[in-house]
Amino acid sequence: MSQMPQQAAPSKCPSCAEPLESSDRFCGACGYDLSVAPAPQQDHPTLTMNGAGSAGDGQDWPVAHEPHGSDTPPAVHLPADLPGTDSGGSALPPASGSPVSPASGVRFDRPPEPEEYPLQAPDPRGAADAAAADGAKVCVACRAGRVDSDGYCENCGHAQPRERDHMEQESGPVAAVSDRGLRHHRNEDAFAIGHTVLPDGSSASVAIVCDGVSSATRADDASLAASQAAGESLLAALPRGTHPQQAMHEAIIVAAQAVNALAEEPETAREHAPHQNAPACTIVGAVVASGLLVVGWVGDSRAYWVPVDRSSPPARLTEDDSWAAQMVAAGLMNEAEAYADERAHAITGWLGADAYELEPHTASFKPDRAGAVVVCTDGLWNYAEAAEEMAEVVPADAAARPLHGARVLVGHALDGGGHDNVTVAVVPFPASPQGAGSA
Image 1 (cartoon, rainbow, N blue to C red):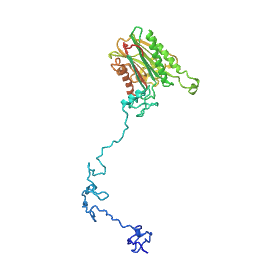
Image 2: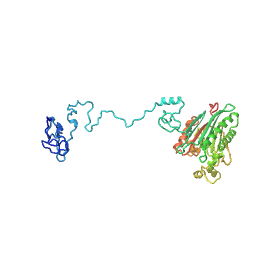
Image 3: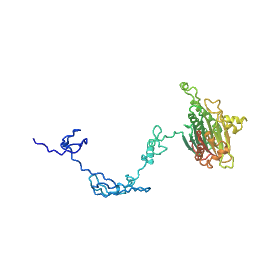
Image 4: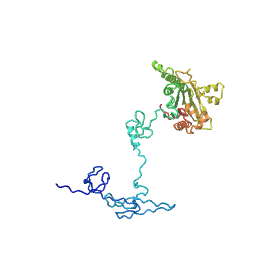
């Protein structure tokens, strides 16, 4: 029987390295079949960096010198110091582009990458036009995204201000600005402005400002209802020839009735909140017509007269319905002491079903020079209480630029801390002839 030619057994078992005899066909330790043992691979030994040993490829390797004493160690040899080969033993192609940094294997010939990759925002012009075309609101922050039904921008996610957080309006020569302030979660102030024509063809300007009583329920509804009712009453009465002071008195009565109506809730609503106060607010208004300046008020919102000629004295035109005013009127305290008391701003008169008795205050003036009437809530006059202080912060051109003047005054209150809602109306005197029609 013929046999396969036998290969000489290796000196050690390829599997477990057990010493072998030349006649062994199987490993006595692990049983490995020595007849199928592969021939040893032609390995290329690792070369030492100092050239010791056999350099089979004939490469002339640089020698690293040992440092002596405190000598500076020699520089380390880098892969780029010697030509390399690929996995098949062929020489690598010559390097192209920028040289590799000797300190790192990272390529520096790539353009720098940004730290952040911002999302591409839509073009504000195109987005605003598209939103306006379909009647959608545009975000006040990015001016690009549409505002969803929850009041947030679909582009940047910014929460949009509520309609009453900041309001500005012009009507003929009159302007008003209202702001939520920096501390309150909502704006409980409201205003109404307008202009109309009297029977003799002269113009008349109207401004009403209301401040919701925060301790009452629905204070924001109360101020809005009162200001709208009073403004509509004045703009309807003046063209009929009603005297401005009488029209102001009637407007305050109508405003009080509108606020009282808010308290007419079902019995079931009262059962759930039996201890809540009825909606309430203060009111102050001004009418400039036929050379007259008429003011009316209930509560502690105020009206100031500031002449264009600042060499003439300014004046406060209203008296507060408040604890402090009562103390001063009774001679029990001077004004500084009364308004320094923590009870100073407790009001003694307001519009609402809980009011003790409605006593509208009205006064009529005939200024002999041009000026501006500032109608405001305590959110402003807390930062400019005296007439002289108010005159200092009213812009010199307020009578000519009432909207600008109102903005400056609201800004003064916000810069002072903005602790309360702030509303300001500026009414030029005399009334401008441009007020044709009503608003």
